[in-house]
Image (cartoon, rainbow, N blue to C red; front, top):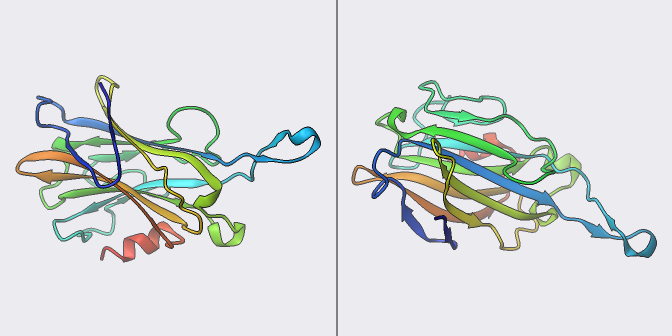
Length: 198
């Protein structure tokens, strides 16, 4: 049974889930539909290309390797413990828009946190921000069984923000936990988020 978290909550993932080593982090969102046109029919908002990424960080929340950002242009970590599903350009359709597959057993010993973030591609030129996004969420699933373990709906108003720090998987006492963060930032590109963790 899936557990719904609110901002700031944490949950054990592996404790009590013996043998859980593979997880899938799913991120989803939809463009806000605006009313307009004849008879108030709904009009689709402009396509917004959100990009999900994972930053592999040490205990001090710093990157120890330049290749420890897994995103649309670097689809897997050097150790192959974190693999990106590929870029979704519109966010249309049901279910996860992008997924990241994680093998917890392969995560290097110097990586203590896997920070899941989403940013809007080319947000400055397109004049887009997360106020144009609705129904955003992050969830963690059992990578073998496909069952949802935890979900965090990002329901705050993120207008004006161009990146979201959604949540993180982190090591604690030999186990892996998940923390719901839900923090908006003004980073305009994944590389800006990476620079903040160097």
